[in-house]
Length: 393
Image 1 (cartoon, one colour):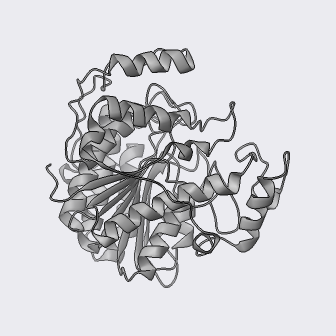
Image 2 (cartoon, helix red, strand yellow; image 1 turned 180 degrees about the vertical axis):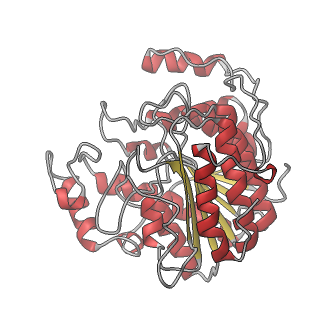
Image 3 (tube, one colour; image 1 turned 90 degrees about the vertical axis):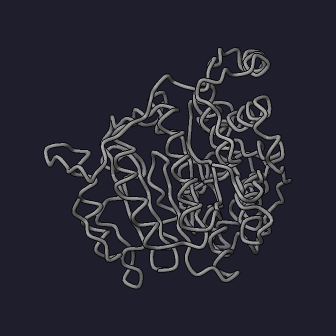
């Protein structure tokens, strides 16, 4: 789809300083490899590149307790610092030097992406280093120190937005964003994730639909482990488009953790890069359909740092630019050589996993014997009536 307005990516190399250390799954090399691959493929030629500012403490404090900000600042100056109550110094969130500034930089980059879109300077804006959706107001959680997405949404609301939709396709439940806006009817959060019965953070069930003042504002699709392209896309199309069309957000915000891939070491889903690309295409089209193209895009999880993340997010950047890449496109030799030089790894040779994503539409009926269909049905039964929608096929 050709876009009617400019696309920007908020990035500078110092965003790679968000770095929990050489043995941590969330290596910043995944962001570096993504941007290098996108550049080698020519994707960035049609995207405005914007430097990432560092968020102020006051901006971060619109979502997070001052006690957390103080603890993160202190941790970044104190090797070996631990504060279990704040989620710092844990296996998931070990401390590292100057971690407050690195985390504030991610928040600043996302805030700039939100500003680009709300001001009209960009129609779509991307921060692939963002999407730190687990961070809670009072504590770090799940590789996420500050919740950049929530800070961005809160700024949108302060700037006058009345309806913001957040769609999270990370394999883990978007619990932090959901909790922060749990009782705010202006924000619709939709998360498709591997069921919390099997995976961190153990939350995000169909019955979780929002607080007393905002029933229906939270929507959760808890998918069975082993779900592949066809099942995932069936669930997505059965839930997300009808809700977004009914809610009509002024801005669509999306989180694109690609840890739903079959090669990801931290989860149990079976998507391909081709299936993930199909989801990105669908979200791009929905942004144009429901929010006049206003689309803020963030990264998220993804721990197959060579085979999956760079290809998935290079596709995402190309789609945001309105110039999707042919899945059969070869990866550039210079990029593969860089991967070999820096990591001693063999990079994929094509932008595809060789899959052709297809799914059976929900309107054809559902099978109550199938775990996947029961999961979809449960979400529709809980959430759709709260939006005046018929939950049955």
